[in-house]
Length: 197
Image (cartoon, rainbow, N blue to C red; front, side, top):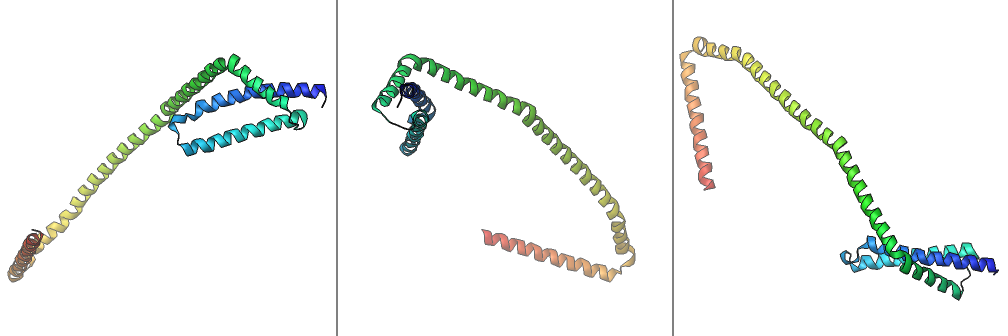
């Protein structure tokens, strides 16, 4: 391995050590360990370290065709230590600022969507429902009125039939039968009420 390749490998691994510090802090900020169950933490940790290992070996493969030497581990530790001592505070402040800004932008977009789209549609639907109820009420009243107009001649016809055309004997027979059915109905109703008690 030439000196240029070794130098490039050292620089790349120092940068990757700094990346490891950034990744760990970002992962810890978003994971919120006290709120997670142990199984989810276990799976997340394994996936995190697996992704980091693959990323490290991919960069190492690009720089020096995957040769692993002792100084590479030292370079990673130096990069991680440099991040922890020099850049950690700045990065955490930037990360928190980015998170809070993203949350505020999301809330602003959400409120704009609700204000410009959801509320107008809701108001339109409410007014449409009220208009439909009003139209249905008007139609029902018109139908009731038309039914009264249609029923009036039929009622007059039966009254005329009852008063003028039907013989007296048939009227008495029908009145007696109607009284019989009403009495039977009342008897059945009383019997059902006594069963319920």
